[in-house]
Image 1 (cartoon, helix red, strand yellow):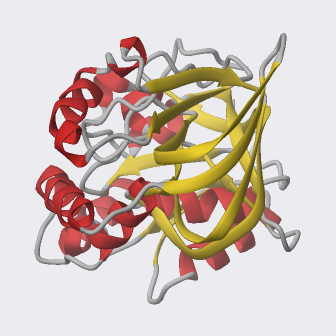
Image 2: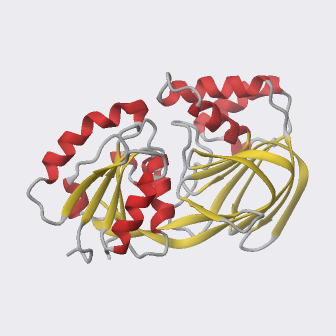
Image 3: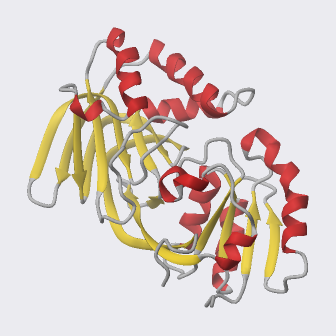
Length: 308
């Protein structure tokens, strides 16, 4: 039996290049007649976080109805509030669900949120040089993948995997590897790297960009984050490496560092672009600390996944 006072479904009508707006009426019909459920639509950037924070203060479970960006906004609004979070995949990629409930990543019913059990998952926390903190559920990228996320945002006429493919090759044309000083805290040792890096990714989930398996062995409940670092390589080698990332076999390549870490400290000589769950953060510089919060969030999950 649910411990929440109710359920708040937060819909981002702009998700999936605006196609999510067409699903709002069906969602309202699905929850019609339930006194413990409400459906709210966002009307501006940042509105999902505001609605989620208000729902959490009322002790309600919050259901993110959008893509990974909507879930990211809800996550950061409710962290520490004790509210459970659910997901209805109204976005184009829905990457987090490919790890959380891979068999159902293509669609879930509103009714599943009422009957679902509860499961706790790990959360990534990022602390910036100015002291600000943000959290992520699926993945983080600095440099190459950060710029790809920005290019996807700037190409509203494309959607899904086509948008990521377009952005990847557009960014590649003028890209130069980023100088990083990286300290990686593993369960049993410390790894220090000081070199130019082509791509730096941290996965709590397995997949980003639709099909790129940046962390194929990632486990949302192992208390670790999966680090994938592509060293400075000639651009002519990138197409072959892209195929490896699509297959999830890049960790076998000597040009790729792979670790399972408790904490990662990164120092940048100059500002770069970062993405968290696909959301773009510009001008990130100085020291950045990434850490895992084991079982930091309670989520609504299909029955049998680990009910409380």
